[in-house]
Image (cartoon, rainbow, N blue to C red):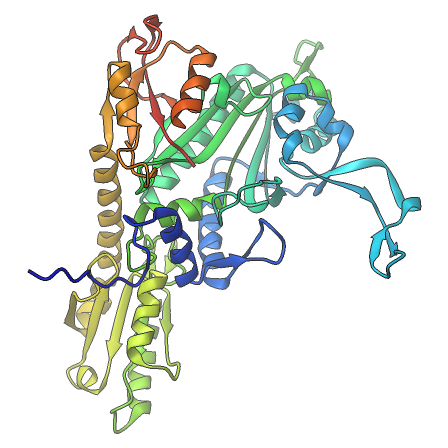
Length: 510
C-alpha cells in the first residue's frame, strides 16, 4: 500500500491547519489580499463580484419588504455615542476617532496634525449607525403618519479589531444596516423577526448554507438592544459563525435621540426601533462552508460567473475557428435565465498552459469548466468538469445537450452543496444532558490541534450570565442562540441544576 499523500492544490489542508487553509484559499482564489493599512484588506475583482451578487440579492429582498436605501455620514459626533450608555460601552474599545482636520509639516519634515486645527468635538468613524440615524429619524418623524420608517444603507464601517482575519474580522468592512421606526412595540418586534427570517432564507436559498435561528442571551446581545436575534452556521471546523443579526431596540435609542411622534389621540410617544445587518463576513462563511483542499467552491446562485470556456488551440490547424466556436457557445449560454440573472460565461484565451488555466479556475471555484479543442468542435461536443465533483471527474457531452441542460445542472450543484452542508451540521450536532460530557465534548483530544473539538451542543441552561462567562473562559464556548423553532420541553440546567425553559445551542465560534 502506498503511503504517498494525495496532492492537493491548497496546502496545508483543512485537517492539517484549518486557519491557514482558509487564508490560502482566499489567496489562491484571488478574492482579497492584505492592504498596507494594518487589519484592512483589498477586495479584488473576483471577491468583489461575489459580494456584489450577495448585495444585489439581499437588496431585492429588502425592497420587496418595503425598505428604501439611503446613506448617512461616515463620521459620528462623539456626543451622539454618549447618549446611549450600553451602546457606547459596547463599542468604545473599537472606535477610531478623528481629532484634527489639517496636517502640517513637523520638525523632522514629516506630516503631523496641526495643533491649531483641533476639532471642537471629536468625530468617531462609524462603527455602526444607530446614533447618527436616530438623530435624522428625530427630524423625519413627527406624526404617526410618518411611521413606519423603513430605511437601509449599504456602507463601510470601522471597528478597530486587534486580531483580524480577512472577511471574518477586519478593521474596516462592508455591510448593510437596516434601521426602522414604528408606532408600536408589536410592529417593531414583527419587523425584527421578519428580517431575521429574510437572512435565514437568503443563507439557505442563495448561499446553500443551513442556519439555526434564535435569540442571543444577555451576554451576547447587541449593546443597547432589548433583544438580539441571530442566524448561526456551522463551518467545516465545526465552529459557529454568526452570519446575520436583527435587533429589537425597544425605545432605548428613540429616547436617547428623541424620536417622538404625535399619536392618533394627540398624545406624544417615543417610537419603537430596530436595526439589522450582515457584512462581508458572509464571504468568509461561504468559503468555510463549501470549499475543499483544492480551493474555493461557489454556490452557483452567487458565483461571479457560472461557466468558464477554455479554448484548446495549441494543436489546432485553425485556432480562430475554435475561438469562434467558443464565442458562439458563450452567446448561446448567456441568454439562459438563472435565478434573476443570465448564465454568465468567461472565455479564458490567455496565452498560458492549459493545465495552469484549469487549476486556476478550480481554485477560484467556478461551477463549470469546459475545455474545447478541435476534436470537441468536430464532434460538436464539450469536455466538462464540475466543481462539486473531483477534478479528475470529467465527461464529454453534446454541445446542445449541455446548453439545454446548463440551468438544471447549476441547480443540481446548488442543491448538492446545501445537502453537504446540512449533513455536516447534522453529523456534528449533539444533545448533551450532563456537565461532564459537555466539557469532554469541547476539550480537544490533541492539544497541538486545538481546533479539533466538538461541534454544536443542545443543552439545558438556566440563564445565569456568570455561568456562561465561566464556560467561555474555561472552554472558549458560548451560547450561540436560544432556538426559536425548537419544540424542546423544559428541563434541568446541566450546570446549576435549576429549571431550564429549553435547550440552547452551544459552540465555539468565530
